[in-house]
Image (cartoon, rainbow, N blue to C red; front, top):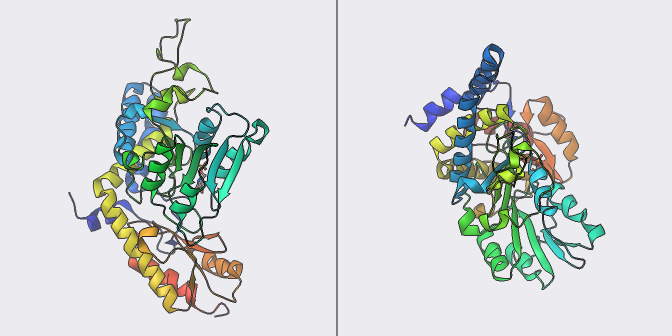
Length: 381
Ligand SMILES: Cc1ncc(COP(=O)(O)O)c(C=O)c1O
């Protein structure tokens, strides 16, 4: 395997004017994803769907890559949906709710992992948003909120604004023990931090591909534990979700035995080609290596921001972080700082009352240094 430095040099050619620290929003594509999309476009232009069989092979390979990435026991537990939000909706509207049921979330969730549960209110479902900022620790707070009425607990593996990384295993164990379904929005974790669906005992996991997995928008992983595949009611139907897919003359049908039953129509083949290429890079480098590189970069940012008098809004404990660091300077308007960063080519986000930086494994130190200069210099300079 070529040294990681060589790979990085071959795969990333972002404009030198940019300091790209926004992987928690939308990631740039590595060169091999750009090439895969170009190739796919050329092939379409030249011969339409003549080689559809090959496209289907890429689709199958992608399912296996995703399986490997999360440690699922089979690719039959993987569905390819269009977004994290869609996958959350498949779970929310697949469960059979009774009035009085409770769903537990945290008080830091991205709107997708709150609104969908709140939408069940007309069915009598109550949403409990647990304050995970308290001193007892987020896992303890979430576990202690479980009652006899709790049906499901749904949290992000890494919070989108603060970047707080949860220890999922004790939460999953508590859910399993008490018969509560465990749902993990892992869009801010998968691709940057090792994820083991068996170790954390999640029943449902969802993650769009355009952030840390470095794919295109519009294609998301949905993991559904095998025991749950038949227990979720289906809300969308079509030719693609039936067991005998492709047998168009057949009048009888039944849903596919696998998680493909959640994919009602034609797949997003363009997105599949892009994500397959991006994941081949991540798996080649290795998620442990990626996590270690990103953790070092995040620590470097934290140390320098603190030394310049900044306030870190993310956790100060390295094991509680993944790829996000959020900060501000007391007495300073964060909107003005954000504008200053944007004007100087530092691509980042305003989240959770601060500036959110999110480097990936390939982000050069020089980019971090430049971003820090524009983050810490007086605003009127
Ligand atoms: C934690 C989290 N969940 C869900 C989403 C939305 O994902 P999607 O657009 O795939 O529904 C985001 C997007 O930023 C996010 O950060």
